[in-house]
Image (tube, rainbow, N blue to C red; front, side, top):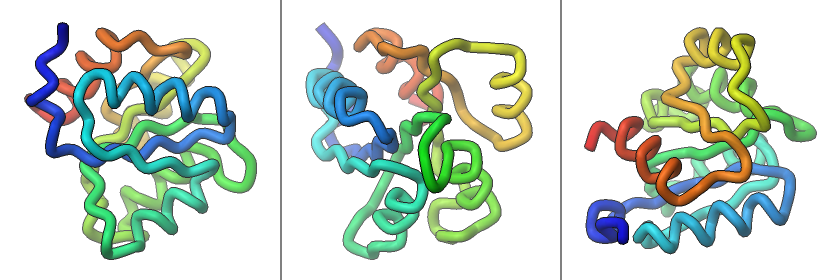
Length: 134
């Protein structure tokens, strides 16, 4: 049983164009104790949620391949300060496979880790703790 108190005060933004994936990850996050989960269908929607001053986001979990703005472009814009208060926010990427190309891009974009789809609660919890430094 995960320590649900450790994530209780967190707000996590999930960015994925697949409805099933959004719901699946959202349910896992709630199961491991995350109190608030925000959802966006692509990078543009995610930036909109980040620009909303009412949202205080602690971690982003994003798919890589999405229409309009993919995960790498989203992270690039975040790291370059499109929404200044989130310039250093931890970001985990959802991927079909952990390839060398993805790992190389992760270093370039300062991505904090990869989660292979479909994620398991234990994997997600470990990656989140590492990305958040807890």
